[in-house]
Length: 444
Image (cartoon, rainbow, N blue to C red; front, top):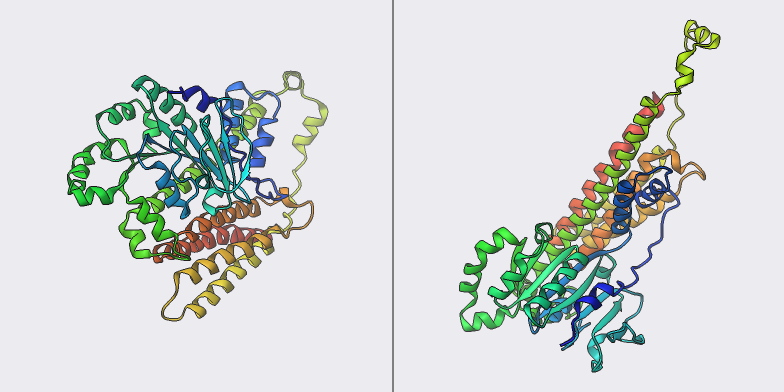
């Protein structure tokens, strides 16, 4: 059996998608500028570099488990298409966003030629150790899915798992019963990683037929409460069938097979992870700004403090001039225009919905609203962006909202529509507060 741990550690992740950036300095740009600050301590520089990496790449979701645990089926179910199929003997499979389906089968040296299509359509070469797939799917714009097989002796499985959890932000542990050997492996995972762990009980339909699912869930419940975010019995093949039947798919089957709950909770965890990274980046920038202010206060020029010049004496006797009123913030008009567009889209959505709103139409209106707002928020006077923090914050909030709505679009159900409207209301609140503050400041 090939030892896959070194190969997993050495394998470079698929190139993340590149998204168009604003001219205005967003959070990513601010962190880059902060890292270029002269005299930055090595500890802060390392922390900032880690944050920058997490800001600029999709969330890494690792789907891990023993051979035959149904990992590929779970990935195909989440995507709603047969992208991986059954890749027996392949230690690692990575799926990332791309504009067209392209697959690569790699040997132990990482060599392999890309081919058009999806992995599930090809026969796995005998020397294949890992495989990569890029695919034009909205979910893959926000996360990558990396399947890792735990094979070989227990020590080898521990080594593979150690590299996998270091690589991943979220872990989906796929298993049929989660026995003692798997429990021992999971116990070695750092607690910070277990906090983002999902236990996915695959082939739940077969356990139902055998009459064992209820006892299995009851037995694992205390462990799951302590060591996982949750437990998700799924029938992945039925889930793929439910999602693969066109727009919306078979909603009843999607809910019954367990796919809906897993997809929704994974989506929320990804959104929470992105928000936490942004919060940490803002805290990092705030820490740097307070340090700069402290340095300015506690490190005055010692020579200037020893002798008081005549000019300073005169300045103390001279009354300070009244401050000139600040010029109105030009971001106020832009924010007000964006809010007006949001209100207009909301009214159009209500008018079209009538008494029986359709989830797909609501989701489409919400996504259209944030995209129109994005165009408006970019229409600022040239050269003035750096002086408009309210507008920069609005752009960041709008971008986050659009990414979340793209995830909600995958579900096309009533819960997703409710979440989309809630997100739009929150976005309106976030834009209203700085717009109101800017307007009041301009009139003061």
